[in-house]
Length: 634
Ligand SMILES: *[C@@H]1O[C@H](CO)[C@@H](O)[C@H](O)[C@H]1NC(C)=O
Ligand SMILES: *[C@@H]1O[C@H](CO)[C@@H](O)[C@H](O)[C@H]1NC(C)=O
Ligand SMILES: *[C@@H]1O[C@H](CO)[C@@H](O)[C@H](O)[C@H]1NC(C)=O
Ligand SMILES: *[C@@H]1O[C@H](CO)[C@@H](O)[C@H](O)[C@H]1NC(C)=O
Ligand SMILES: *[C@@H]1O[C@H](CO)[C@@H](O)[C@H](O)[C@H]1NC(C)=O
Ligand SMILES: *[C@@H]1O[C@H](CO)[C@@H](O)[C@H](O)[C@H]1NC(C)=O
Ligand SMILES: *[C@@H]1O[C@H](CO)[C@@H](O)[C@H](O)[C@H]1NC(C)=O
Ligand SMILES: *[C@@H]1O[C@H](CO)[C@@H](O)[C@H](O)[C@H]1NC(C)=O
Ligand SMILES: *[C@@H]1O[C@H](CO)[C@@H](O)[C@H](O)[C@H]1NC(C)=O
Ligand SMILES: *[C@@H]1O[C@H](CO)[C@@H](O)[C@H](O)[C@H]1NC(C)=O
Ligand SMILES: *[C@@H]1O[C@H](CO)[C@@H](O)[C@H](O)[C@H]1NC(C)=O
Ligand SMILES: [Cu+2]
View (cartoon, rainbow, N blue to C red):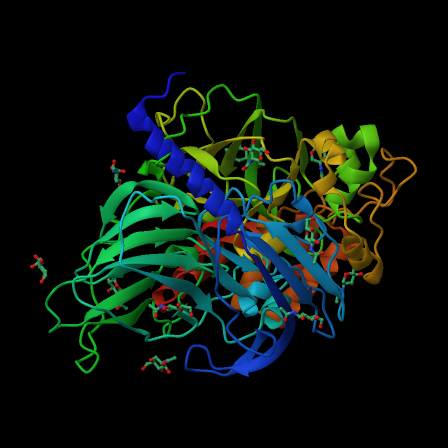
């Protein structure tokens, strides 16, 4: 191709720029040790939180694209394992650095140190990091990560400010978890947080300059509830979601699920005489109960005049006017991936197993971690690596071929919203159907290939999307990143309940790639926690197709006794004859009686039990408490 004179200069500049970008790549090394400290985060209660080198909050990181990060993470706890995941980073060629325990690594034992060592080559924008073990990030083990780039952005701003949103509990996850995953909580009602927090505090003040454009990088590092976010009388122009730059879209309100990120431009006024409210509001449809003293709206302060009055809470006419991220267009305009090579359909169901505890299922499987981290099964299984059986029958593993277009059709049979996250990729959200509301008698609407919303020409891309109640979403992505990638609900309670599956992407290529091999440190972490780094899901390194002894989920409840029955009966106990009934439910699990037999033993008619329970739900509502699950499951 002939290069015209006037094109030469830009080309030279690009060449110079790439040289500069490479020359400036930096290695950032951190030594982080976990621990506990007492902090009063919301200003209402001091409680133990997870610290980094004795401090809280954890550091906010800012790096350049191309930089290397080396984190020496030392487990400073004396009674629990840990791990670290950098949310949204593709870890292209370094799957072992992704973090989820028993997926890409062994849990880090107390006293042990793991080195997370990777470069950030394919990501720009707003990210975060967090423990991927046992809900630890809800106790504070999380921070933000901004990846900047020398490449020119499609927008201008004067100043960049990070804003971390979340919800906060007064109890630690251990305490909440014991009550949550329990026969006494048969509906799987999630613990209700005490407050919404912002930048790890409440009632925050943000002093701003007039006539200034701020790039606000908003990150929801919470573990449960989505939030509405708005600033009184100030528009926000969305320019990035989850590391994907988008065509500008101006709105007065955003809706942000846990783990999502939004970068917005906010231009301040010239007039500095008035201060304005920064508002967060719980999406209270996600709460099973709304305690009378729970503040659904949290107010912070946008201060033009630091000495002026703090604004009152701001009310808006409707919270339905938030920007629907489905309609955003990535700046890169990646066309709809048509005709997927492999389509996976999963139904989300919440149900009880034999122990009476409520679990979450993709189809009929509640994710149950293998005995060997799944990545290590990939690397050690040779030709068998392409056989999903190697990864166990209870891990929901799907083997993907290199560069295929993958589609995930997710039907949500549950009455709640769920924010789903895929590791290692951003995906196109090609459809999100509306809510089907059980309160008005609507039932589950699985995705219908012959009757759905039109797919966009340039679909929205991001790494966390929510699905509406009793509805569906369809996602597509290209399998261009060999690795074992977890796809899961980012509500930590639901992840604990097993709402996860694994995508084993191009396993053969992983075996052949030098950068995908385990480091000595990686193996050491396994040895120190007493796990093997070879073998199939059952830990068998002789016969990779023999799964004898693998971890499996609890048995299903005895036939004749439906989950609905457990819920009805336990609920009626909670409402009335407390001790006796819960004991009876416990008893049943061992005895394996039918629903009818149990009812007879209890001197109850199951039909009557159900009717009574509905009555309880209604009367509960009247006393200012609403209950989503009891209304729908009975
Ligand atoms: C991290 O700790 C190691 C060993 O204690 C030490 O050699 C190193 O200098 C520390 N690095 C940083 C960046 O603090
Ligand atoms: C925020 O304000 C509430 C209500 O005045 C107060 O109870 C709480 O302690 C404050 N929290 C912080 C962190 O300032
Ligand atoms: C840490 O992980 C190991 C290996 O999976 C496990 O045996 C041990 O129970 C875990 N420790 C705790 C406290 O959960
Ligand atoms: C991190 O990985 C790079 C690339 O493999 C390697 O050169 C470097 O030595 C590693 N860092 C440490 C501290 O081992
Ligand atoms: C929130 O915290 C981050 C990190 O500490 C800080 O850089 C930022 O300025 C804070 N945001 C506001 C609005 O104060
Ligand atoms: C704000 O002030 C700047 C500089 O003083 C001026 O250029 C701009 O037009 C003003 N904007 C508005 C909305 O009045
Ligand atoms: C919270 O904000 C919404 C939206 O402005 C408003 O409708 C609602 O009344 C507020 N709730 C409380 C308890 O102030
Ligand atoms: C902005 O979002 C709205 C939906 O909230 C959508 O209708 C519109 O097409 C979007 N515009 C752009 C430029 O993305
Ligand atoms: C989800 O609901 C649909 C519609 O009722 C039903 O056909 C499907 O079997 C359900 N899926 C599961 C796993 O129960
Ligand atoms: C799920 O259902 C399939 C097909 O019915 C069956 O083969 C499989 O064993 C079931 N898995 C579990 C964990 O129950
Ligand atoms: C991973 O890197 C390869 C090139 O080495 C590239 O083709 C692919 O698109 C990358 N994948 C992601 C998810 O960035
Ligand atoms: Cu969920």
